[in-house]
Image (tube, rainbow, N blue to C red):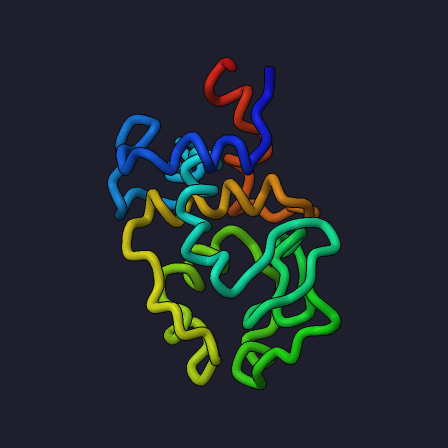
Length: 158
């Protein structure tokens, strides 16, 4: 039986322990993604949910809806959201590598962005959030996300 992302997040809410073997924060992104846990990403996303929604068709909040953000062009994912000029200047697409840099330090990725969040310093936590985003729609074709392409069942045998 498969749990929904919301059910998994509720189950994780009572613990701060990592649900998988620890991966060093400075481990290269492909290895962090291969060990990533989207269930832990859902627990971590609670910080993001203060400003962002993640459901299909749900509205923007203080930040844009993030459904299908991976693979989308930067600053275009939600047509109703007023993205800053700083984020628009960043250009390109949301690859796993770029999302990792954004989640690490939004102010460094796009100086002048309105994103007040200081970032996630733990690289394994960033990979877990990216794994959650990968399960939340979008088209992931870039090489930086290749480790996620096998899906969580193939990585864990569940």
